[in-house]
Length: 195
Image (cartoon, rainbow, N blue to C red; front, side, top):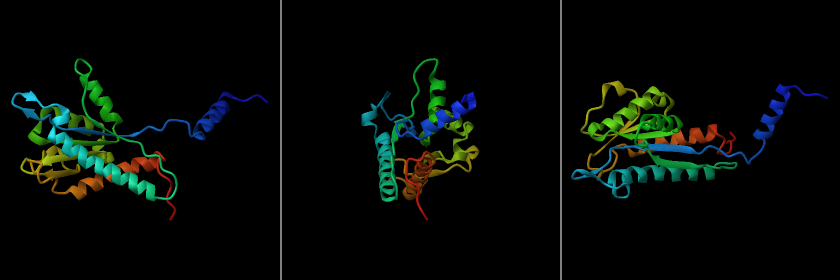
């Protein structure tokens, strides 16, 4: 019996859908924050306290997601990756940033000092509908004003020194955890829960 091209495509799709060997796309979290400076030079990323603070907060949320997924019935294959949002220098800088923002499942952006680079990245994320999807979470120092054109986007205040941490750490963790678990469920990285 001769099969049509459409039938062969359907069979090929079903074969791919039924195999576990197909690589699952990881959940990618990107963080954008101003680079810390010491004098006129930028602090290396390993010594950057702001990056360490945000990375620590997000790592705790990732650990919570793994714990919840393990406790839920069924299998889980969470693959969550955390990156600092950076573009490559040169002509491709904006296109690299756009591609990474498009690919991001969650974006955490720190508006400290109204850094122009971070504001451009926030604008790109808003233009790519990351705010509406729940993927965009903004951190801002409590003493800095909230830009009026960002009304309606999730944000959390923090003390500018970062010593006291986020004012609404529970809210930040809940927003990020909800986003990660939604993406994980949509990609079938966690077992389906039975009522």
